[in-house]
Length: 266
Length: 256
Image 1 (tube, rainbow over the protein chains, first blue to last red):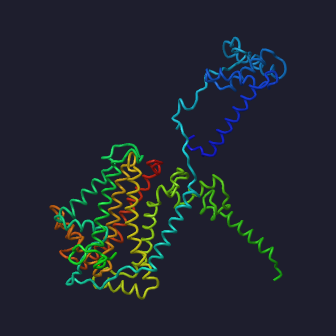
Image 2 (spheres, each protein chain N blue to C red; image 1 turned 30 degrees about the vertical axis):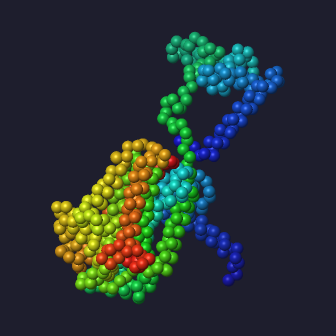
Image 3 (cartoon, each protein chain N blue to C red; image 1 turned 180 degrees about the horizontal axis):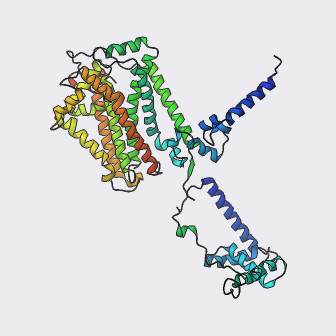
């Protein structure tokens, strides 16, 4: 039940609605001309709604009762079968005196709907097959990614400077770009704060985010504060990396790239 | 040589039938494999495609419909993994031409660029792919945060993800030193000097990282082993847990 495909569910709902409309139309029509099946169904509809026993079951038991009472035809054979079996059972113990009301040997006590005894999800989840729907998307993404990397590598060469030389410090010396935010903070704080404490605390808080943010909702409108905090931090970090990458020249002094050029290698 | 085309076609069909009916063939391809009877589109066969593939069965047979929309995930997690594979492949290629000693490393890269077929291209791909992976892992983290996908029951997987981010940065940083050019040496000098300011254990941390008091050939060997063996080994374990938990925690999060 949890994985009923959307289109099948819709089709079933449409069919149900169609059948209901048909029954209603039949009941609303000429009473004398209605088919035997439609009339009890329509009249039994209210009763079924009240007792929660499906209409078709009520109808079946009613027709069986009628057949047993009226006798004749195939219905008699069916109805007589239980009484014919009585002597056989009688050997085992006291014979059942009569069959149930209306000649039944078994009675419908109740109809238990699956929802009341099983944990069934009320709304079926809308799912699609991984092949082809997801795999095609993944393949496309991987292909684009490969094409981009390949073409970029054809046109742009990775930097390769002269042999490492301990006696010649380049000016400026920069860390890889993802650490340039930290290097940027070195200009403002003690290295222990900028290089160890801030990133350490940052990573710790980032890892602890699910335990700090107790709000169970994932809807953007319910978590404006969390989104605002995260955006501010991401932008803060991105700005520091940008400044460190493009706005720092010789001596790690602030420069404008359009005046002094870019001192940055990837 | 009076054979006509039709018998050859029949023969081929017969051979195909024999091969597909053989025990060897059927021991390789599991029941329902498209290589047994060909593929026809049915829900059963769609499931078999996933279940019968060692690669694809990382996925469930069915996924939520919104998970397929590119606008929801932007494919960032998958692309990070794909870039990792791309980097592994190109990295293995580079290892054939590289010796991690101060005397040889730079010359090896110079030779790779000038004399090895596709050497320059593969090195470029490795370099740009690495930067791209750092970027995509970072963006993946941002996407997960903005969708609230770190919330219960996915808290633990978020922590694994933060560790994967750190491992990605470490992989990139250890690779940065290997060309042994001026850029590599001084970028790593800046980075390791910062780590030397770790409270209490600062000088010890730096000594362990550098394999000595200063950056040298021992550092190169140490970072090489970290880069090609230890860190990939660790990150693969963490990735396995990460992907496994995605399934166990109920698939992709959302919809919003």
